[in-house]
Image (tube, rainbow, N blue to C red; front, side):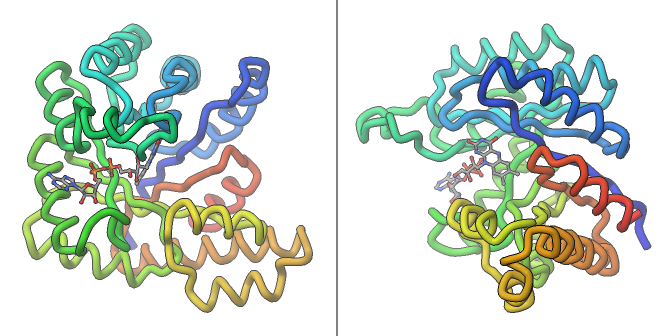
Length: 278
Ligand code: FAD
């Protein structure tokens, strides 16, 4: 079996007073020795300071490579350069370059006049202005705006050719989507390291929210887990962990070594998965 390349994703706390607790969560996650921890970015570029602060803690205090997510849909080039300067100041040199979803405050006029139309333009801009390591997002079940998987993959190819060598996938629950996606990406010559995005589902409610945000398909096996254990918090948590573990084991058995765990800032659940897959 291939060596496991494990990375984790966390989100910054909403309120400043929650930072100490966030640091405790990160201290716990750091004991799992991930290859990097990525930190999400507020929709439309809100609260970039919190992303920088958490990424800095991971990089400088925990001494683990950190990746700052950076979205460009609501940002001008000047805004992006400001965040770049903040990241440089705290020694963070890895960015997950994203377009982001249209924020609710943006009018049609603002949205149509945005400086960066797609993530590829952000990748090119960062390539020109920095020597950061650039990562990007990819969608095993197709991005919701793309007319077809083929079109989405062509644009993904442009993103990698612009300088993005590592791709982290949208979460998925059915591995077959990921296998088919990798085959198609390979066929059109996309050259990148792929990391499979896995999110453990530990409550029935979480599945509903996750599916509405990601659009990911729910296979029968996962629907059965919810139907069987959804009403019992502890059993559901265990069954959700088992589901994620078996998904990762299957990926590993298919030669996939890059696993990106959406930790949801839950160290115990994350640790249970990591200890089972190692
Ligand atoms: P793009 O790569 O720009 O693609 C968006 C759409 O545009 C696709 O349909 C693509 O096919 C199409 N497209 C690309 N180029 C062209 C072109 N030249 N012409 C026509 N169409 C084109 N959002 C946040 O707000 N904060 C986060 O921290 C965050 N983290 C994420 C982490 C991961 C791993 C992933 C996969 C997503 C994350 N997102 C986050 C969500 C992301 O911002 C949205 O999915 C967004 O809608 C697309 O971003 P993108 O960078 O993938 O866009």
